[in-house]
Amino acid sequence: MNMEFSFQLWLVSALPILLLLLFMVGLKWSALKAAPVSLLVTLLTATFVFKATPELILIEAGKSIWSSLSIISVVITAILLYETSKEAKAFDTLNKAFSASAPNELLRILLIGVVFSSFLQGVTGFGVPILVTAPLLIGIGVSPMWAVVVPLIGHCWAGTFGTLALAWHALILQTDLVSTVWVALYASVLLSILNLSAGITISWFYGGIKAIRKGLLAILAISITQGFGQILVTQINPDLGVFVPSAASAGVLILVSRIKMYRDEWSIENSRIMVYSPTGEGVKNSNGMSFFQAFFPYVAMTLITLSVLMISPINSFFGSLSYGPSFPGTVTGIGVHIDPVDLYAPIKPFTHASFFLALSALMGYVFYQKRSFVRTGSISLIISRALRKALPSSIAILSLMGISRIMTGSGQTEILSYGVASLFGNLYAGISPFVGLVGAFITSSNMSSNILFGGFQYSLSGILNVESFLLLGAQTAGGSIGTSIAPSNVVLGATTAGILGKEGDILRKIIPFTIAVTSMFGITTLVLTLYL
Image (spheres, rainbow, N blue to C red):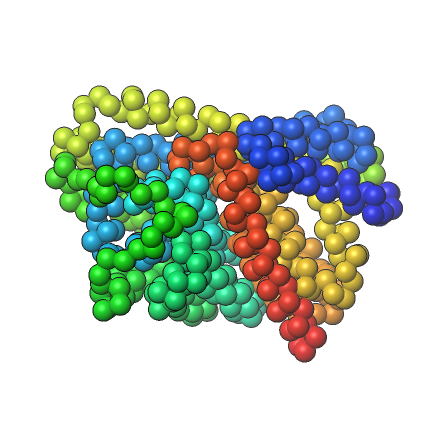
């Protein structure tokens, strides 16, 4: 770049992110309101400070629209799946089954908010775990805001090796490492700490120290199965690093709920995260639907996803069709170059999460309609509700992606990361997971954070003469935590929980957790760099 680095320039590059946080957390603005204003500020700083040309702005806007369509398609189809299940009253049956599987109320919350949300992250990701589990938590009495907070925290440990390890592969592509064993091991160890911290934090939210003491055995059972399970599985097949441990943890938690200390009904009186019915009525189930029938769309989604993604001949057939637009290269007035792209963020429509969700929703509707759980012709009503709910989220996502792309194309993201490294020098290792966290917050994706900063972390490990696996592991672990505060994920959860506009309240509950755990990662990484 032709412009010399300065603290003032670093502050300008951070301004869009700082304002987004101020608007959403400090002023309690919704993402629908905060994101467009922050986007406008991004455009102004890119144009007048970083000398971005109108052509560059238009190209980066085109990239953001294309990337947004990929996410928005998942939003619409995930809500479509949710509305299909809601129309059939499947959630009544699911919640009754969860109550039967775990009479202990805390275990019920952990079963849905940690175990089930992580299982969904292992297969699909893209915000689907929050979309699906928030209504389920509301169904067992969790208040809408906490029904979003719980799975956001509960599933974030799966942000690296979930979605069949998309974020992991994105990270490794930014390096020239011959062996990735140590990176996977260190990242998994950090993520197991995150997993344990999430279970303890959710229990604290539910009922303080009393709930932690009561739920500790169950929390440890989940953490050992998911956290240590991930450590082992990623050494064999990273693609299954979340799916296998999460599936196993469901059986483990159900078994734990059968032991003496958990098999009876138990709850915290006046828990701050619960909304209790004044009549004391439980979940009703009058449609005669079995658990398998209620769960059918999600069974279908899992089987379809795993078959298409894991069976090579099927994957080759369905993945043969791919499309992505081309974009020319750009350069700003301060010398920031972006290379031309012949195939930008190509989408394979028949291996995309939205295809699996749409197909599962259709199969669920046909399944329910043939058994008279939904009225004939109600599909139009279901689609209408899904589109209406998806519209505000889609506008927010378009704005958020615009911020991400214009910051990257104009060099603001590069200045932001360079400033952090320059400020901390040899102590940078302690800050490295925060870079991953900020990347996930900016882009709403750990995969995108790893693409954005993976190469930077790898290069910096050579400059600072530290083991690359430490910075790379810290990067993706920090990015995993970042998914819990990623604005698009928060928006998706608020949408299905019926509290759109309360995103700032949600973030205020989660940010202390993210800072505390990311700080633990930073201290651990810094200490290890001093001895390795």
